[in-house]
Image 1 (cartoon, rainbow, N blue to C red):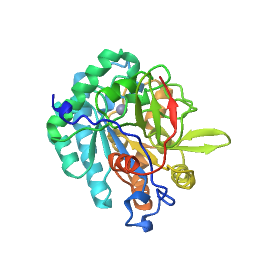
Image 2 (spheres, rainbow, N blue to C red):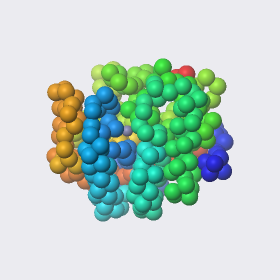
Image 3 (cartoon, rainbow, N blue to C red):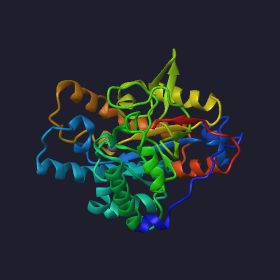
Image 4 (spheres, rainbow, N blue to C red):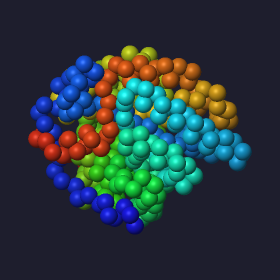
Length: 325
Ligand SMILES: [Zn+2]
């Protein structure tokens, strides 16, 4: 399998002391090590969202969401190109089969293509063996399309938690260089609230994986999730900005990881038949997302996750170790 050609042996991770003293301002320019915000997109069709689990969705509607996923992703690619920003796209493996040209175009625009499982099932639904198979299949499908190693992973619905800490070992075995699935927050569906807020080495049963957690804002002893998703649509944009600035002022290593989905930029899509609270959580603020994203893109500097990971590896700061498995 192609992925085996690209297997990377994890090495000790470190950071330069220079990293991101001020990593958020466009005016800092030039030094790539100082810009440690990452913009990421989870590329999946709208009916795959966790809120729609168990909701019946016709084949016709699924086909419409599939087409709309492609057009919304292409609009995002245009918006990023206009802003001169490259980021990381965590792509559901099946999309490599159904929309190979889209995956090629994401990659040829200079973005990183990373994995987001084969068909968007949460890690809780797997055994270590079936998760390994899912990872290998999705990694290989993406690599066949882009002709390059896929190094990063994000679990659907941030589903690496205390119960699924074994997934860290499986990710390391499959040759991934980093993961971005552990949200250091308290939430009804995901999160490890006491996990570090910046990059850390997640320790499974036997192996470790470099973890890039989504951005949180520390307030009154709590980690508020301000990295994207519903928080991006619901909270004032000032929260996300404050999170990025607070991260830039914190102890190194400082990395502000944001995440978005193509369906969040498609206000005219047909609505899923969700219950009232889920419907509100899913569609709140969807009309203002494109404009909000452009304000974020013009106000901060962003890089691809893999570039930040490689800088972390070649520089001097020890990352914290944190046991999850
Ligand atoms: Zn997802």
